[in-house]
Each structure stands twice: as structure tokens, then as C-alpha cells.
Amino acid sequence: PISIILEPLPNRGSCRTCVLHVQPGQIIIVATTVILAISDIGYHWRYRRTTLLAGLLTLLMAVPYLRFQITHPAASVDHFRLLNSYLLQPLPLLEKIARFISLYTYSLSPAYWFFPKDHDIPRHLMKGYGHMHVLMLPLIILGLIVVLRRICQSKYRAVLAVMISVPFGSAVVGVGITRLLGLIVPLIPLTVVGLSYVLTWLANERREARFYHRFLNVRHIFRWLLPSPVLSIAVYTIL
Image (cartoon, rainbow, N blue to C red; front, top):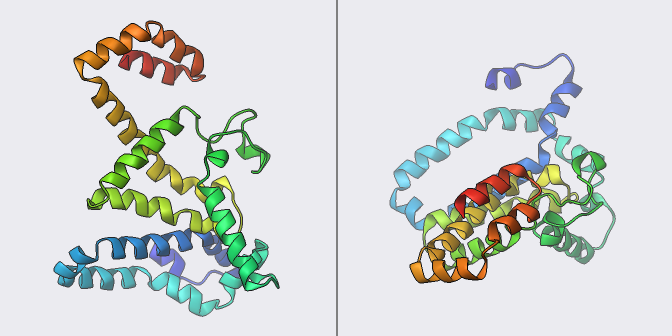
């Protein structure tokens, strides 16, 4: 609540820790806002009066944050120093840019999301598993292709905007699943779009007949591949 943030706490360190815990999230919010604003600039200009009122409301809601930044002007830098961000290290500018690009691309890499790794904290890992099941990868790729083909529609650009924005939070510090959980927001719709495309394609009677003729034991194959009983039952029901 705003009242909690506006009221000065006896222990200022506690207040600082509370607010700074979501520092990478602040970068994601700003990046998403900018990309969405550019993406729908025509719409915002057409309804510029409403956009102006929304901007004023946003500034009002940001008062607690602005108050904190004024009260603790060095807090953001201190937090990046606490996280040992390379941005504050005495490195050449080109090396910092290269590291940013490397971390950003790895945040979106299938190698990070779908295959076993030892990069994250052990308590955030399951031995032998990626963060997402590898069977979702083809559906996500297919969904991404569909979204890119329909990029002229605002709702599809919004999914891409979130997908582009989330890795900024980890790219300035380091890749970690807690900083990339926001990617679940676009990845799940992409999976659904890909699955919907496949089911629509299979809905054709001739394709459906050929599909079942060639894969008579497809239900058993899926039950063997899927480690989760819930997913197995879901796929078994669909097929």
C-alpha cells in the first residue's frame, strides 16, 4: 500500500532492502512500457486525451517510488554493487556491451529453458530437467512463427513486447530463474497458440485419418514421454 511506503520506517535499511529487492523488475517495467508505447503509438495518438490522463495517473502512482529515489539517491547504485553487476566494474565499454548481449541472448536460449543445467542456485533446479519441458519447445517455436506472421495485430505485438523486455532484468546483472520468471507470461500464450495451430491443422478429416493410421499407439507414446501424470492425462484426453 502507498501509505506503508510513504510513512518513514524507523529502520531505513529495512525500507531500502524491501524496495531494492525488485530492482531488475523496475528495468523490466520501464522496458515493457517503452516497447508497448512505441508498438501502439498510432492508437495512443488517436486517443491522446485518454493517453495523457493515463500518463498523469501513472505519475501519481509513481509518487512513492520517486519519493524513495529522492530520499535515497544512491540506493540503485548500491544495489547493483551488492549484486556485483558488471556495469559498475572497470571494464571497457565494448566488453560491457558484449556481456549484455551475451546474457540477453542466453536468457532467451532454449539451452537455458529446456535442458538440464547447473547455472542456477541448486534449490531452483531439478536434476535432469530444464525449467520447462522440452516437449513444449516445438509448440513455442510454432507459436512464435504464428505471432510473427500476425505481428500487425496489437495483441500479438504485446506478447512479443513482454518477451523482449523480461531479459533486460537479468542482462544487467546475471542470468537467474528468479529474474526471468516473467518470461512465463509470453511463453505460455506462445505454447497455446502453437498447440491451437496444430489441433486446427489436424481437424481436417483426411489429415486426422492419416495421423491416426500412422501413429496407432500415439497415446501410449505420449504417456511414456510425459513424466507428469497430469500432462499425460491431458494429452491422452485430447487425442
